[in-house]
Image (tube, one colour):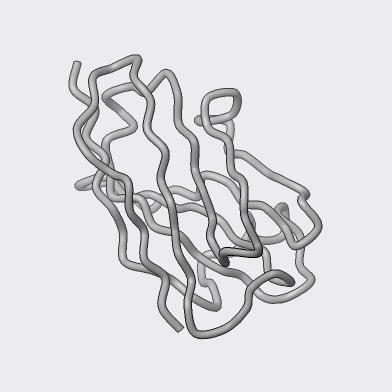
Length: 125
C-alpha cells in the first residue's frame, strides 16, 4: 500500500491550496481517511477526516477553512485549504484508519493503519 500526497507549495497568507493523496495497493472506499500535519519543532496535529459514508470531523484550528473530500472511484483523498495563515506551514500527511470507523474515532487515535509521505506547505506572511 502506498499513499502519495501532492499539491503542496509556497503560498501567500490568505491564499488557497488543494492537496491530493492518491492511495494505491488496495481499495479504501470502506476506510476512514484523514490529514495530519507536522510543523518543525511542533507535535503532530490531526486536522480532520472523512469516513467511509461521508461523515467528517475537523480540528478547531482548521474548521471553516479546510475541507476534506474523497473520490472513491480514484482512491484519492483531498484537502482544500483557504485563508491560509503562516502557522499553517507544515508537512501535510494523509493517513488511513481502519474500515467502517468514524471520522471522530480517527481523531482520537495517534496511530493509523496506513501513513503516507507528506507534502510541504509553506505560507508566507
